[in-house]
Length: 428
Image (cartoon, rainbow, N blue to C red; front, top):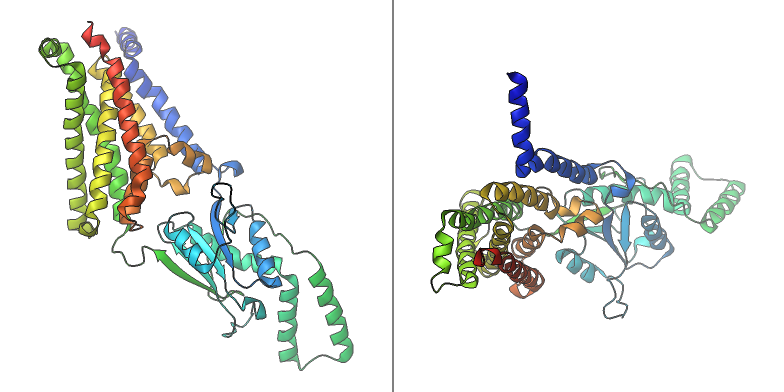
């Protein structure tokens, strides 16, 4: 009897395409996504974007900047991207800080005026000018890595400066050099100044910054420095959007239940058209999704001290836009499926894949660049980016127009596709 039972079960599984997809396609899809994100291949490791504002304009600052540019793990930007074909001015301390606040990069390095007078020190000279490391504290990896790379690059890109500082240390503690020794040292130092700076090794893993480094570095948070438990907003949006998608697809499944029971035929035989029926269901699902978001963020405010009330306008705009988008997505899935079983399998497969590459399961800024771009094809990424602007970067409502436009246009497009697919019920 056991072989017969096995054969019967295999036949049932083969006929249930949804279960078959969940059994094999979903694990392979997730394995591929997380292998790309966490894999050890060099070409999948994300490069960290760092802004550099050189306000010193000396040989030492230029060597340090070029040393950073030679690091394979960094993408150094000295100026913003051109606008309308016009090249933008180089970053200053003010514009670099504004760019970090705006989310253009997780870290900015400001080389201050006077840095070249005493760029490095082996004894912690209090008179040297400290490099400013401006960071977005939502990215906990990039600042630590760049702080360690700064010390490494200082040793590999400024050999002449290193030798001069070493010479001063030896002269201080050894009683000085003879004229002949001084002449030979000057010749050697001159040769080092004429040699190109070493690019150093491309590194993928930076060391932790040390207070005793040869460079003086002062780190300052420019985003999230005055927030209580600031990452709660990110997690509320990330997890919230994923479950909104599940809820909307489940609620849209009522359309399939009505079709199976014959209720849909009776409704369409009245004055109700398929367009108005779908619009009504989208509005209901939007209201349900928005209510879920409100409950989620109220819980974050009550339990985790989320700063909700000062961001009500932005929350309303993003909440309504996200709710319409996920509601239209649910209606599309229901219109594309023939049974509840198909809807359950398809929605699970699609939503989990969207959530994994869209940032609901893992922050997109830690993904490889190709995966970050792929994430922009999902509702999750645009919704999370919008909520991040509101709760993390404290940006005005007007700055949300890209995210709102994409979500609303996507909602309209999905609704039109769902309307087209639902024609089969009108002619059934």
